[in-house]
Length: 249
Length: 313
Ligand code: SF4
Ligand code: SF4
Image (cartoon, rainbow over all chains, first blue to last red; front, side, top):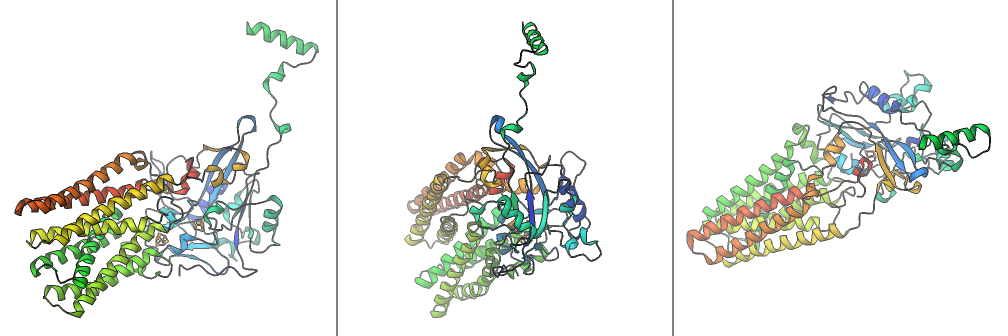
């Protein structure tokens, strides 16, 4: 059923990710381990066309962008992982004509049933975040499952029952938990660091949250090159200033 | 948005079919001036052919056309599903109506079924338009004028077809001319208003808002997430149409204006020359509709483009 479950009740479980843009270093480990896990798990296969050729096209459920914000010395680079945010008002689900797209009432995970999806791609149009990628070979839509086949998997060690991306992140920039529980570790993180959801203007109410990068303070700015010659009166500084003058002629 | 040819064909052809069928229903329901049986058979045949052909065309772009029946299940939430249900629901009353009309039945049942058919045709076209108009992710589609424009183009192409059958069947009446001319003017007017509306709307989303990094200053993309294009870029990042939007808009306007001119010529030209005029009018209307539908996709910008380097959306 592509009508959304009622998730307004207090204590409703909302599983999701909290991504720390301050610590992410853009290493792509999350994206690669996502591809690896889901290429064998319930989303398998995540088809690639011409993977080693000139014009490769493949399905990935997690993409890490690099942005730059601010001007000049103030500018800072920010790596920005982007995957399904398991929105509360997920129009990707309600537009689906077949019922293949659904949001689970018990934990809020948004999934696609590959056995009933007709591959009309309308859900990908309805997602503002580009989280859905069409599998050309299978003719069905693919998306992040929040590793539903890991997080409840009794065959895995308890510490491995987290999404593959969370497990893989070397800087601990990805946190997994219940964002419906105000006392959970992820909810507290969001409170402390003023975590935010993407594009609130569109009203999708994403469950996943992002922690903003801390503003780079002036003290952390790299030393300017000019200071090599120095301002002081020491012998070396005078020598370098002299060398600079001679060499600049 | 990438214009999928099957969808463009579907919406244009089935739109014309629903326009023609709906106008036949309306004519039967409100007047006594349906064309004679021979002309009617041809008109109904073409209407059903266009509608059915369009519906089939719309399944071509599916990953699993054999599962298309599943799309009838989610009418509670999905406009695409509603469109499918309404399209199918139109067939039974429309087929009975066609049969009654062709067998020269004229009574209450014919009128009622004619009106029911016309109504179902109209709401099917509305459902098609709502698939696009309901998407908050695409500013150029999330517009109140999208539904009226779809209806107007369906009416204009349907009315031009009806005029064609009336002329070729030698049964043209002033009403046919007024209907074709009027709906062509309506389509041109609404489309022009639509263009003005989308041009005037401020593009108030930018990369800073999309990433939530705007508070740090201007945000730009300095490293793409992947080196080759992915599905999202191919499906949602179409640019060609936006670059040529001005020219294509003039082309559509020109096509509709020429169609209108040909309708006027049909009114004054005698006999076979009139038939020639109406065929030209048909060709221009259909061409303008196809270009209009293509541009509707090509000049629509999806908000996800912001993550891929678009400045505004
Ligand atoms: S991020 Fe996109 S695919 Fe995921 S729930 Fe939200 S709208 Fe749906
Ligand atoms: S592509 Fe599949 S999951 Fe997406 S809307 Fe179509 S049928 Fe539903």
